[in-house]
Length: 464
View 1 (cartoon, rainbow, N blue to C red):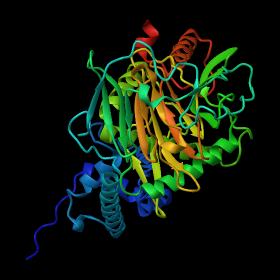
View 2 (view 1 turned 180 degrees about the horizontal axis):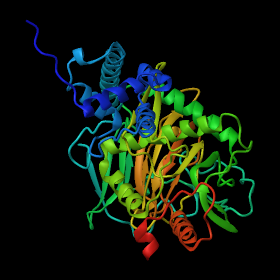
View 3 (view 1 turned 180 degrees about the vertical axis):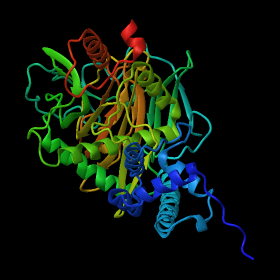
């Protein structure tokens, strides 16, 4: 004798009718079958839209419309379903299986690259070097540093002034290694600590990206060089090329916070894709920092959270993608980088110091590539990084990250023997802070109300 059929309530029938309707949505069907890692937001939007049109109320307590549908279908026996719902449930299950497999793959890649957190502490297990602050900086401020020039060797030719509105220095200094307090070799990482205050001076991480770095290096180097060809340069009176990415404070005589507009060809067809790749490059660097030295990313996070500062994410995709040996791997759920970024090739600057966002004096550069045609990439090729307040010389190398306090006197040595560097840097400058605060004030006062605003005030802001 067969068991009596379960009688469905009106609520059950309404749900199954809604799911039957969902199963006929071609866009939803395509997204579920593609199982793209970033398709869930679009899937949830479609389900929510269909629910409104069908007059079906989704529970407000459910995590997402998609998870609610999957969970609720599991409460029924397949004997309750028509064939269309059985097929739809199979598609949902296949989508879940594919997403889980993709998630495992991304986590595996993240661990091998170095994105996953490798330590529960704020710092990796690397040596500490304690130094006392010098009464007189060395190398001297406002000089380009020549690391390998003999006493009788001529100084390089005076640099040509390309932009009279930018700072300019034409003085050189031959490095005297005996006056340095510490030189860090190319195979050493360390944390520099002030001997008196116990405060951090700088953190140097070699091999920031672990496995897959050759793939990342090829992609990043090509991307940076291509992006520099597209953009107007910054700091044009210095050797090499430097350009701003992310946000900008606008022209000096008309400050206005917004996305950089330094592309020489306005609105090229692939602009959004190119900016997404730049966002991904900085995203992977920030993820590497979060995984290996979260102390510094916590500093950036506290500033961005308190100020509602946007991320370096012009397309607002909240994602970064890394091409790894022909296999592009995308990551979501990782905070993206602070919005002020710089890309550079063969860039050097004299010993100087910078202003910074109050409470966050930290900058981080990632030297992605250091090459030279005959293999002379050691100290004989220059381009070391100096922190003069403590007499520090950090020999540069590929895949090297340096985090330092920009209020200290610092600079990059002169390039010798045709060595070449490709890298990126991020920081939050004092000018960015001032212009961002002014930008928010203009929105609150009604001076800015149209266009794609980068900040929307909440009720507390409006009440102030």
